[in-house]
Amino acid sequence: MSDWSRAVSGRPVDDAATGDLVKPAATITGNRGLQIEEKLIFEQDSPGHCGVDLVDPAPFRTRLGGLERARPIGLPGLSEPQVVRHFTRLSQKNYAIDSGLYPLGSCTMKHNPRLNEKLARLAGFAEIHPLQPVSTVPGALALIDTVAHWLTTLTGMAAIALSPGAGAHGELCGMMAIRAALEARGERRSRVLVPESAHGTNPATAAACGYIVDPVPGNAQGRVDLAALKSKLGTDVAALMLTNPNTCGLFETDIIEIAAAVHAVGAYFYCDGANFNAIVGRVRPADLGIDCIHLNLHKTFSTPHGGGGPGSGPVALASSLAAYAPLPWLVHGADGLELVEHKSGPAREAIGRLKGFHGQMGMFVRALAYMMSHGADGLRQVAEDAVLNANYLRVRLEEDLSLPYPGRCMHEVLFDDRFLKDSGITTLDFAKALIDEGYHPMTVYFPLVVHGALLVEPTETESKASIDQFAAVLRSLAGAARSGDAARFHAAPRLTPRRRLDETAAARKPVLRWRPEPAR
Ligand SMILES: Cc1ncc(COP(=O)(O)O)c(C=O)c1O
Image (tube, rainbow, N blue to C red; front, top):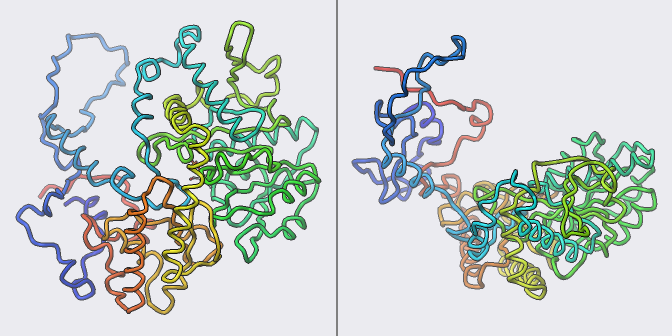
């Protein structure tokens, strides 16, 4: 085993603490059932092996002036079957929404309908080249325009910038548009207000745009403290960045008053709309007084994310910010759809480009397939089912786990660690035990506003049976924690190919590079 393999293999198994279940059954190979112990690709190196037969190149005169590589590049030698097996086995070690319920709060890990995938693979979309003349891709432009139409209709906003490549990128886009609008007014404001429960990307974005991040405390109901917010507002505030529904899984019920207070000091109201799946088709952000909102297509509109695909974070803008939208713009001209690519004419105040070309075309196709196959009523049902599922889970668990903010939630339900009090078991231990039961853990220790947070988002695509089973597992684990079975939790996960990592060593002494075993 190399240093690297040893580093990731976790802490040694403590038999006394873990009991019989933990002891891996000894096998000749080190494999467990059909779980194959996979070596690093470099450890599988058999020098001279190659998946392809390449002819030696004809002699040629080098033009590199002696800078050409003198030694081989050091790639491992493997046959094609070895490479295929290696990557197939690695893929089988992954957990995905296609494997089971993925309750990661704030991430909306819901099913990606296969229809979306089928349409995204149509050659007319999948095989176009970004540098193809615009005149040869009218269908792609029409699709982008249709996505824009759906998103402006659903948000009620004047314009949409489709190019941002993720939620955080959308935040950057929105805050740059706000900064440009303020500068056009001749104002240089210095502060951005960000609630303490905000997603970490919000303060990071405000800081990246050069603003001082001023945190706004929450109230006892898990929402923004309106009085505290008002006391912080002033003419040096550029914007409020508010997540709604917020990261406690709650709707900000004072949102109309919040918008009015922000506008009264001439600031902009940025909304983090990553959780739009909880309100899509039910609420239009423009009607709440929001000036700018990013949507995570990869969450609300079910395009694959995490390891499965790139994100897409379009930003919807009110008319007061539309002129600052990044290029390119798609406009309806006399001869059909036209592309505006330069900062001139109506686009002279655009903030420039944020990304090459239009953004994630494949994600636009998937998102549009999702929107059109659901229709307006279906999208409304998405929101209703997301909220219903989270509340069903809340009610099934409220007696066994502890709710910091009792009462109805939106698309996700937040628990704290009071139910583990005096058990010697932490939120992390509890989450790790879930892995042994075949579930990806929920989001833990976020949001920071409650102690030992467990944020669970079942999403709208889980059935009642699947949520019932998940709730039964959580209840049973909570019962085991209450009955004092701490050893089981401290040892978890017990049944995975790798045990719990030493997270302190991983952070303090990261092994980032593989080095061959010294020759014996
Ligand atoms: C509330 C919230 N804001 C922002 C983001 C950032 O989005 P992304 O990861 O696409 O950058 C997320 C991600 O899930 C989120 O949940």
